[in-house]
Image (cartoon, rainbow, N blue to C red; front, side, top):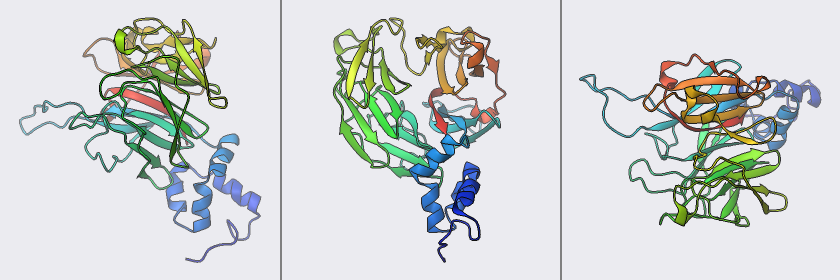
Length: 343
């Protein structure tokens, strides 16, 4: 196919760029097939940040969610562990969609895997093999411009129930436990575009079953517990400034004894709070995804109750009543974790 020397023949480059900037992300896949220059532009870091800075991206909730259980010929549901897939909820349009399965795991994601977003991509890290229940080092990256998964470089070592977050195109993992159930203090950073891992300075202490939260330019590892104090959650947190590579301990950041997994929120005062304690409707299995001035929240009123799905307007305060969402039946499954995806 003939390559164009101009983005759009007959148009000045700056006007052509604005046309591409306004192109909806769902059209990027088709546009990348036109020519190499279009593909390189749409997949470039500079173009992503240009769209973001000019207000042409939108924030969606990207969720690790239980898939619908198929019933047998007798109408009974088979007894098996739930399988998980990646769901995407656009709060502006109200549209839900399911991203194609990871090729290595066509029947469900690794259990307890971490999901993050980086420059408009979805990144899946770690978890347990859904068949053997062994921890895995797998990394997968989903490109919306091609609508395909690619295999990333494996994590340097196996770890479970670790904290994870993303800053400036890099994914950070810290804490968790190894294959011998020893709590970890080590941390690594993954550059998504370079597809490389680099070791970071260890945290000040071991933190298993901790939660990762990005606050401004800092990555926080909230709570967790050490090898010898299994299940006794810390009230402290540790904060990493990626530029300096140094950790800072924050005392009394989290309520002791409460597991922080997927339910850590950041209030207007900058202090952490627990979404599971914000409303009885999400008191069990709460999962929250910050979407700018709004927050997506899911959970149940009690063990075994149906999942509830809500939006909270941050301008109205974290204690304001949750606004229930009308969700299609195939997206009513339990939400294990989630992240904000800016597309």
